[in-house]
Image 1: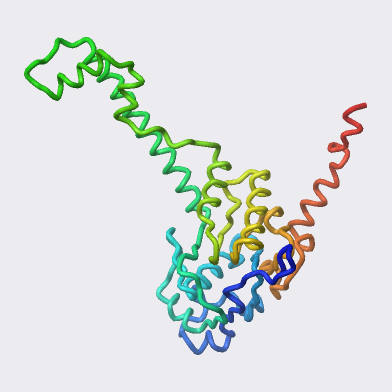
Image 2 (image 1 turned 90 degrees about the vertical axis):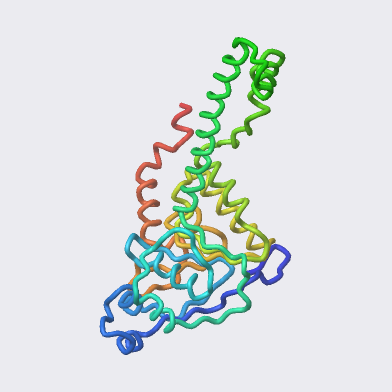
Length: 290
């Protein structure tokens, strides 16, 4: 995969090898216990990586589990919890990786992390709003209260209330609200701030909080970061906009053989296509203008 100048784009992880069914069976007496017993039946063992690699599959296909395994083996921590059983570390021992130096500031970002960021902004703004109401009440109370000459601190507050506007009084004691956008805009801002030059980013369904136009924007950001910022992305996604990123390497985990496919060869993408094709007359602008 090359950037616009024709230079090879950056990779830190080249290959990742999952254990065969024989290795799994020799390693534990319960070979069907999570995370054992998932990937051998998908014929997924040796995984090659490009600067942008995407694991596609329906719920329960194992794509999030695979991201967790890769991240843990690379030493990339995640903040949100996941189903980490007692056998998880034993499974990791059976996995192998071929890589360069993994950047220490690489990140694992889940949809839960993005939602948490959105909620934290809302909560912070709610706390600021509550504080503002308290200060407005204090302003009017002190503005019209009898002057208290016995308490210098209160006298100073009363003097401010009498000589300043309510906005000036409140602003001095309160930080401004964090600028709050729509969920999609806030999420895009989160990704823009999270992506730094020269890292691996593991993204688990990053589209979950995004409307289609913001999914397109995120796809553009990912491609630009891979092309110009020496970033490598490993993604689990259902989004047609993420999947259609130019030259992304896609593994179809819904396929029993986990084949590499083009985004337009994936089953769900064909379903989208057939659905909209069936209603193509509804999108005919010429008909609407007549």
